[in-house]
Image: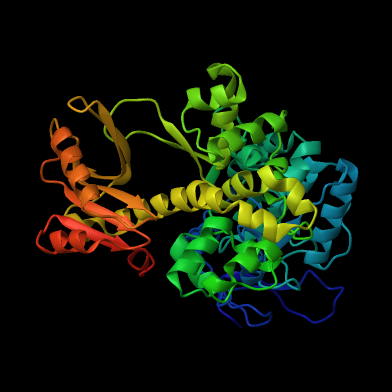
Length: 537
């Protein structure tokens, strides 16, 4: 007899589902999962260490009752991949919803749950009954194991031990036609505590960020009932380069500037470019060809977000930001609208992760906006102005025409952002201080009636009146930098209160003049960084 813990079926007859034993683990199925222990990360899961650790901790919690986690993020970020493996590792129930009518969806849900429990189709009268059934699942180690004829326990008959796991993927599809689901889940969570239901961990997953985020709003039914909320983000640029198998920094940078860190895009192209020389042909054939799945990706990304009633307005705002309008006033002027009328779409795009809202790290001034999703910026700056050419299969001609825009509107901003991220990553090494944020600022120079835009401002936490300390300022440009840039930064440093000891960082994708390199070599406060430095792990 195995020791106590999990619920495992004994007996071999397929119709006898009432003979069970409790054990701390089982070898009857394909899985070996001591309850309460962390799950081993799947070998085929790239990166996502933090996400897997958080999900593992959530499902390994053995506190009785129904508890809910929310996993969300834009499509193709790799949400379903780890969730399917999580369900497999725990013998849990995994259900991926479809865009069906409520009655059809309920039938399908009962069909899948019954198949999971190996009892045939389950006929639920309504979603309240279906959720209550999920809330009374018991731990299993494979799809052939359960604890009663339904793999559930009656109310008041909770079992000690580990937690059962259930995943409902594409939850917004169900929510669209059955808006009462959050309220039903709220009631189930509350009842599970009052009526001693078994430990069940339910994970709700979806790509409609606005819909999933609304579940957590202060007025939402699930507010206070969600134990874990996990936003699945794209890979960082270093992880993205490893994921694509690209070791050449210039090529990795260019691919990242086009596609960002979305892992699902690798499945939509035939191959990655093997060298920088192949990049142009690769972009034309794999991204900008009308037959490519990525050809209208920016429009599809926006279209899958529910609740955006005027899609043309949102696309216009994205176009304005992508082509250089960075303030609310500039965006409104570009669109011929009032500033107030563009505030709502801007805020919505920020919440959805398409646009980033950057506060000035030094001055109290209005924020500036930038495109946060590389493929959106790429399409808005490169494809949209030349759509007719690309659709007429004149891709090489259109791509050649876009080179100035590609460099100034895509590569330039992307390089600046990567430089800030890199300085944040190695900031303590450069300055000796713990960097809490790296942003931008604009400094007025009254003497020569000019303004200095600083691409890099690294800030550490201060004490007393100086709640923040400027540790470094810098410039990040694709072109070669010379000694004139150093002089400009030295002047800007004198205009910033408390920045007299700040380091100066110059970042270039094309290198530095001999004179600048000589001056930097003689000083300890000047740091020169290249694209190779940025891509050094």
